[in-house]
Image 1 (cartoon, rainbow, N blue to C red):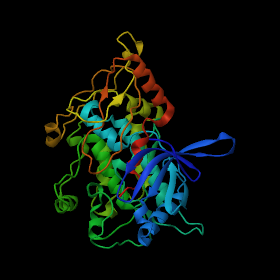
Image 2 (image 1 turned 180 degrees about the vertical axis):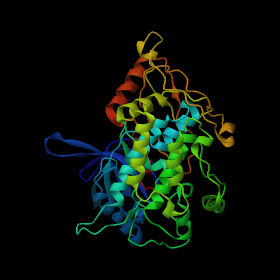
Image 3 (image 1 turned 135 degrees about the horizontal axis):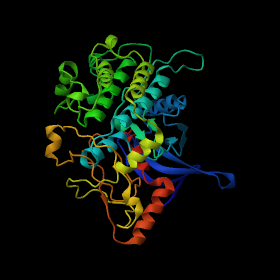
Image 4 (image 1 turned 90 degrees about the vertical axis):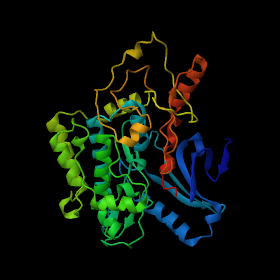
Length: 412
């Protein structure tokens, strides 16, 4: 796509389009040649005359501008240029957790327990900060994210996890919401929210669902209709993760099952308490968690070639090297064997121990993840022409390889 000017921004590639806005890769240009890359979210022109939509768009930016935390994607700017409303946001290079889980399902095998716990602890830290946020007068905002899900969690190339999309967040001290108006993804929704009750503990239920799915490699709640999904949320017996992954120790089972209590009073009462319990379990079980280890495993996971049929998907270019390359001797992560759900077996997804590394790790160019998108992430393919490989590796190192994850940022 050719560069275009938009106020102080130079607009590059389109990262995603939704019913409310588009998101582009853009950069600011200022005196002295200083440039800063951002994700530029622009309200669709035909919505500029809809006061309710414009107010919601501006509210999202104002709320996000108060959030300054290492595990929350930052918002830099809100404005209007030539009648087009925009939000400039932090560009986080890396795949969403949803894309990571799909790659694991299709090729890389289970997410190692220590990395699942690491990701959860980082998100819990973001939620603890958001839940305790106060306004300028010191009054608690009682913020509830309402959409904690794999699509709204990005794992950066440095192994730092970012929670994104506070566009659905509720700022209110009220514990109730309108029955029949549910915002967020049903599969991660707290049962009481479907009955019109809402507080910060709903986010902890959602985080429990995310952790359960990372540990088991299967969806916890899965139904063909919204009505059936709500019934599962309210009534389905919930089994601990060790039911499908026997490597999960009892103390981790207990943490997950506490988060998934249907009675909010029996659930973790704060994100800090949940994160602290995970940290203690990590220490007790002897797991090693750090950003470098997580980043290394993410790179490895995206180097594994899918066993399924992914014809028609966007091709990913990676420098795989030749057979004599010493980097090919890199060790694989510990084997983790889990039992996939029946519907995933039917897709031909990989269900065994991760295969050997076929080359040096390289972060792929991942495309955007949406609810309607049910395809796995792109396959890593070998290219015979060395020139193509070198060019591709240069593009990856330039930092733009994984920026499409921003399609998940609040596009309706």
